[in-house]
Amino acid sequence: AREVAQGVSGQLRVGFAGTVLYRGLPQILRGFAQRHPRLKLVLREMSSSDQLIDLQHQRLEAGFVHTTRVPPGCSQVLVSRQAFVACVPAGHALARKRRLAPAALAGQPFVAISRAVSPDYHDRLLALCADHGFEPDVRFELRHWLSVVSVVAQGLGVSLVPAALQQAGLPGAAFVPLQGDSPPYETHCLWRDGGESAALAAFLDVVRSQRPVAPGH
Image (cartoon, rainbow, N blue to C red):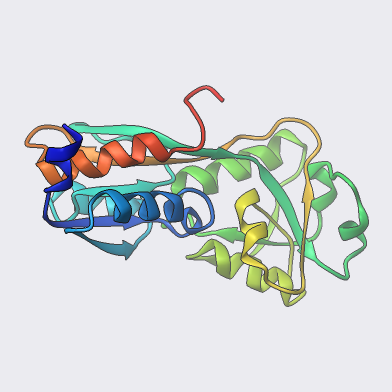
């Protein structure tokens, strides 16, 4: 079967939400290029919400999304699961803490991912704050997680972000682990059920083999 797979050619349109660049996607792409050099991938950075629409309308063959809302007629595989961490300006007093209770961010200008871009995580983070007894003072709602870190690095607010963003290397931002439990930030690879092409099957085989975590871990 592997020898047959090596002969797969064609093109796949794959969407991805930004933070997968720091956790999961590079490993998958390297493995794919080695195993299927004749198969071309066209990668589009898109919000999770837009990817779901394009999958339904067959403008994408697969997508890497940060959402638990899998539409009917789609299958998924978990690619990564990571924790949220506090993101604060490097010169802020909170940056010197070893761990932070989420409530330590109360009263600070808060930088959030836009609800229109990532409704699951916007709502989940607001719920996390509510669980710790405060409503964040949201001053910025942004379309990209990297923009969130950039605004924090400029000293304009604080945030809760996926741990993988520590790898972005933006000067001026500090990342502090949270005390207690917080909702995980999950990346899933989604595709439409039925009519799975040889190219898509080859891609999903690499996704399954490269994923760094198994479901439940």
